[in-house]
Image 1 (cartoon, helix red, strand yellow):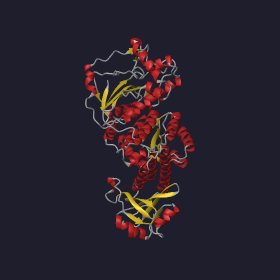
Image 2: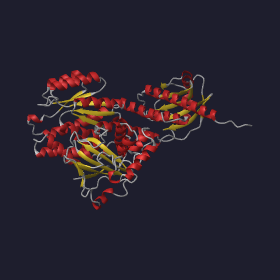
Image 3: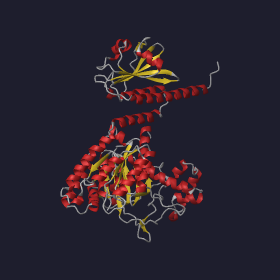
Image 4: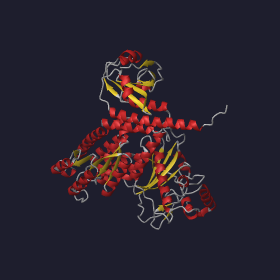
Length: 605
């Protein structure tokens, strides 16, 4: 029976991961103010996609990749239109008539899936329907044209790619997060439309031309691929219950309900805000769980997702390396969690886990590893710490006949939740994320004024008061500021415009001549007698002078202090590195401006 839910309560990333972790087959339709999309799953793997946007069509993707010409695409659409009942998917027509290579077509279909997921991630308000098909599609099942192999993309890899692309597009302004509600509920019409009878294969598997997102990709008039007569409200508690029933069926019903209620409570809690420091860190780190314990895998994923932490899980040794390498390629640092040894499971025996863990420590020495273990496995825990694991977490052992298994597991998950949040809230990593995000923003700028403002903003993340001072011969001109005219939470203020002279024996002159930053305390009349009367004196005498250098000349000095607060330790190396990069960007911007002006035609007098 089809299920329905709201994106506000269950984000699309969670829905996709639930389908993957429970290895479901079926169709996910998503509706928002910005459009409609569809993903098709086979045993938790994505095998197809469609999207209402004209930009997200396989023909348009091939056109953008210069695999076909506009003339070829128009020809294919014309052939499709006049074919009537014998119409083929556009991709098949392009293969047959336009010389499209197998590799280009396959890549375009993969890109279509990725682009659809990227768009869906930005939809905060909307509804989804999940039509779960319990029939497993056989391994030799094919619907794509004979020239292509069947698409079956690893859902976790698609999400890793999509989240990276989504983050880049948000920073560049290409994607605006939409929280506008739907004006009309698209599900209301489903009771008015009869669903078409699907075709079936010889194996009895339901298929249609929409199954892999091929039939309607480039039609001018889009036809809704699925309609439902009955919809049931999606309840995440049902997923938790299914996993518990399957993974730990022998515990008492009362114990099961405790665990279901606990996980359901976590699922319903509000998440960290997208602009919080933790969310910034979470986007640069991910938890990867390697365990054959399905309940543990599912519960840890639930805890991490509540905190906005990227989390992926696998019980396959080869896929573990794949996840680690893909994460690192996308500049995401993984934290590995190894599950406890499992009885009667060769892959997750103590000996195998020790061997796999040792390999990962050797292969990836910079990656933090967390080991889970039963308290009775004393020697195994000691060896894990000796091998270099960051921590060993004790797990309640149900096999010991513990009557309080659910209570103890809940205590474990609460402790794990606190610990993993602390891992992701590391001060040094937060500073690195600020640097990374600011560098990404810097690459988009081409005006000197915008670049100096970004330097001011970067410094204002670390100080209470900041001010840009433009170096002008023997004077400094006060430009924009933060935290001086008004609270720094109000953003960058208008230029202050006052001037102060640069005294010959002052710290300001030293910074300009040496082109090096200053951070500390100094009794300097240029600061105390000329600058402070204009901006007010801070409680603590510690201040920063940060030069912005372009063409081997100091263009501006960013002044910063702690206002009414006590001075704290500041990563001056981050400040210096970022400002050096800003100087290079400014130099390039000025060169481009000079080059463009030289191309302008000169007026003849």
